[in-house]
Length: 159
Length: 163
Image (cartoon, rainbow over all chains, first blue to last red; front, side):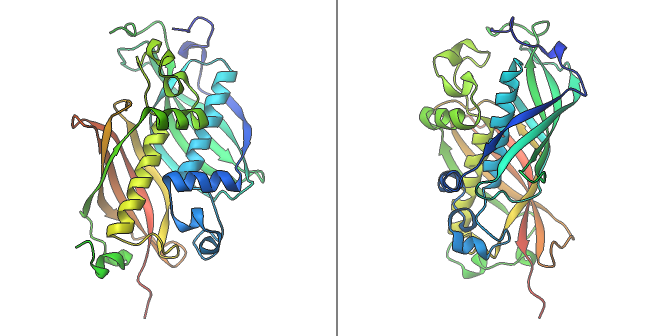
């Protein structure tokens, strides 16, 4: 494991908070993601999108969650945290559509930590994640459980 | 059934709790997993098949958000063929949120997931005078029949207009 140099589960506590970088979503990004994963008119066709519930071409909700993951992954890497994935999201709300050229950034706040019972050397933190656009409007909010390296528990990766 | 104009043109009121669909199968290739990982979840266990062997996952696994994105694709394709036509952007509502999402078992290159959908609840809430909320439980099983992914999502469906 590359754990020596990185922050472990023990080093992270409820109340810790991280601000991410910003990612701007282009029209091309929206169309590409939609073509691959969510080919619905309001993500693909500007004319149809104008008549839709969103009132214009907007990113797939799953595109927004993917960008959230990129923001989170980069931030944890910058903070040298040994992130080993996520096992779930207890709730998520899509609050506002994301349009072309919107710039998204995120605030990640640790709300809980849990030693857990994994047989691997990891434990859990619960994070509240709020992604907002360039106007400071929240576009998605979620609570997710993340797995963080914890050398003091579990077996080895060879189990 | 698949060609029924009734199925394709249903309003919120016409969709029964308990309705169940199998959206279909998707086999995850190494390339699509790496492409998704490099863009959205750049961790070596999502991006580098060789280096991933030295992680606790002992090989490449799909990003959980990739598993979600494929769920969306499977649903769109299925609904376009068999249910409320998604090509009508005014009729087909958006997702408002989800809960209890769990990634249970890793998905590796060559694994095939079968995605299923069941309507479990219809809320009384009316959104913007026009939309109802359909709550569904969604699951994905791998080629060994293991449950690997599940969540409950709320999606808007247009209510029958008042006469």
